[in-house]
Image (cartoon, rainbow, N blue to C red; front, top):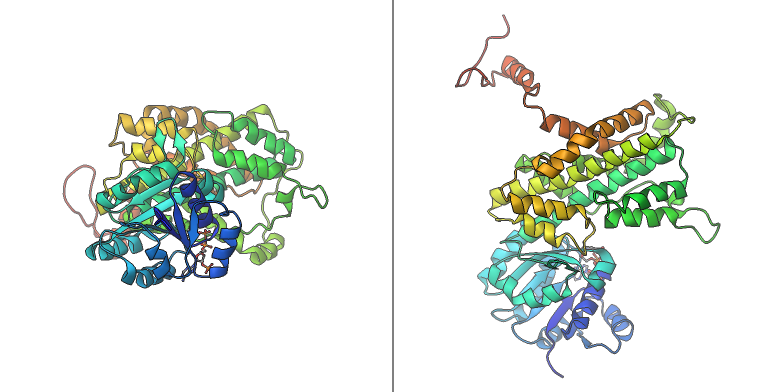
Length: 471
Ligand code: NAP
C-alpha cells in the first residue's frame, strides 16, 4: 500500500473531522488512536471508502507515512502530549514533523519546540479554532514554530483552512509557542464576547421583559449589522430559538447556569497579569464563569442578600434597545482591543514579532470569534502596524464617541435593577480609565509612600521623592 501523506493521532471530535478535511483536500491519511476500538469504529464509519488507513500502534503508524512525516496530534492537552512525544520519538527520523493542534499552554509548546528541534525533528504548536464543524469544513489555524517547519506543512494547512476573500485562514504566526499564545488569547476574546451576549440576553429577559423569540429577534437584527455580524451572535439566535421536542419549551431555559472552562481563559488572564496588559472585560468574563459555578452559594445568598430588584413594569423603548446595541458593540470591541493589546505586549516580551493584520485576517473565517468587525480590525492594523490600542484608531474612536453614552445608560439600568453585567460595566470602566489622562493613582502612590516609604515621582519635577507624612 502507498505511504500516506499525512498522519493524525487522536480520534476525538476534532481529530476525526480534521483528518476527513485533509483527505477531502487530497492528502491520503493514516490515523492512530490510543484506544484501538475507536480507530476501528472510525474506519468503518465516517472514514469508510476514503483514502484513510488505520494503525494498530505508533510503530505501524510511523511506517505507513511518507517521509518527511507530517503528524498532527489532536489529543488532550498537558501530559498526554509529552507522553505521545516520548512514545513516538524512537520511530521518528530526521526532518519528521510533529504538530500539536490541541489547546496547549504556550510555554509547554515553547519547551517542546526547543527539545524536538534540537533532535532534528520539526515541531509546530498550532492553535485550531472552529469547533467540530470548523475542523471538518475549514478551521482557522494558528501555527507557531520555526519557519522551516511551517513551510513543510504550508500546502497542507492552507488547503485545510477556511477560505476568506483574501486567502486561507492560516498563516505563519511566529517562533516557539507563539501559535498557542495567539490561540489562548483568541479564546480569551471568545470568553469575553460570549459573556457580553449572555449579559444582553439577561437584561432583555429580566429588565426589558422580552420572551425568547423577542430576544432572538434582537440578535437576528444585530447579525445584520457591520458592528455585530458574527458567528457568536448567529448561534446565540439559534440557541434562543431551539425548542425541546419533549414539551416544546425553549431548551436554553432548562440549561443549568454553570459555565465550564478548560484553561485558555484562565491562561489569557494569567498572561495579562504577568505581562502588565489590561484585560478587564476578558477577566470579567472568566470571573463570571467562576461565579456561575458557585450555584448552591448563590441560591442561599439570593434569599439572604437584599438590594435593588428588577422592576416588572419596565417600559422598554426603542432607545433602550439602541443603548443596549451600543453597549454590546463597545464591549465586543473592548474584548478584541484587550486581546490584541495582550498579543502586542506578549509579542514584544517573547520576541514573537506577531503581525496583527495577519492575525485579524486568519480570524475572519473558520474560528469562533469570526465577525465582520475583523475587517475593520485588519484595516486599522494595516494602516498603522504599531497601533498601541485598537480604540484609538479613527473608526473605533468614532464608535466610542457615538456609543459610550448608550453603554453608560445600560450599565446604570442594570445597576438600578440589580442585574449583574460584569463585562459591560468593566468595559465602561476600561474605556473611561483609558481616556483619562490623570487617574487617582497619585493618591495610591501617596499612601504607599506614607505607610511603606515606597517613594513617588512628581508631575512638576524629575526625580524620586519621599515625604515624611506622619508626625
Ligand atoms: P479530547 O476529548 O480533548 O481528547 C480526546 C483524544 O485524546 C482521544 O483520542 C484520546 O484517546 C486522546 N488521549 C487522551 N489522553 C491520551 C494519552 N495520554 N495518550 C494518548 N492519547 C490520549 O478531544 P477533542 O475535543 O477532539 O480535542 C482535542 C484537542 O483539541 C484538545 O487539546 C482540545 O482542547 C483541542 N480543541 C478542541 C476543540 C473542541 O471544540 N472540542 C476546539 C479546538 C481545540 P482515547 O480515545 O484512547 O481516550
